[in-house]
Image (cartoon, rainbow, N blue to C red; front, side):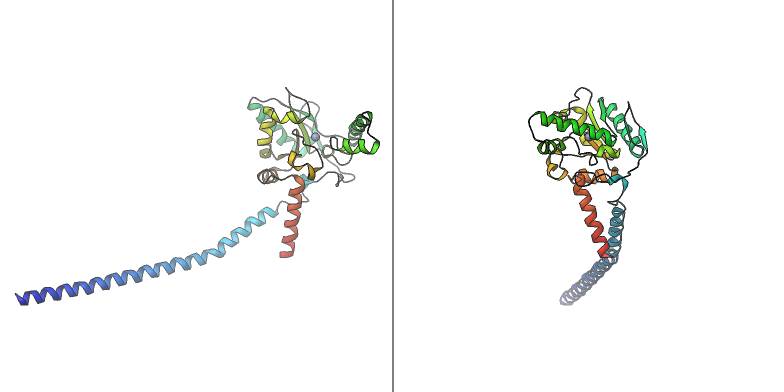
Length: 261
Ligand SMILES: [Zn+2]
């Protein structure tokens, strides 16, 4: 009996040693794998950085000096001799040829939704802008304002000639056929609701949002759309910017990229 017991004890001991050995080697293997994984990670990190740089480079392809980002406002007059090829879109409205296709598509898609948008203003010659501006100034003068005040007030509604986007051919005023008055109520029409939400897909932005008056120096105009290109429009909309802010953002970025190189 005792002999058998001894044998059993020896066998159990051997088994236990074997088990210990096996668990130890499994741990070793697992540890090795972990370090392998870590070294793979460190191998991949620089590649991730490269792809991030590539994305940044892609962004840089948009330049603040692109034709569709021309900034025209009270501080930035339209350059002298600014020349554009015009194209008729609908009724008698003409725009810069380069935006005609996108504008037509946008209106077409809105109509497919059962909406009825119409263009009420498009490209304006400088003399047309002069005429509109002078009319507005006269209106304020009739209300009793002096020349200086009348001009100041008028400029919030009608751009001072040379500072209005309609002279670039890149802007259009679009209204609902059912409601053609240019006031804030316009934003409540189904047409504006759709345009405010979707115009970026065609490269247009609502140019004068109500919360950006201080920057655009123009009153809220829920009918004035400006073409900037799809990529730019998307960024501007997603980041709640106005064109002034976006161009500043691009210029700062371009400056930083220059100093980095
Ligand atoms: Zn307008």
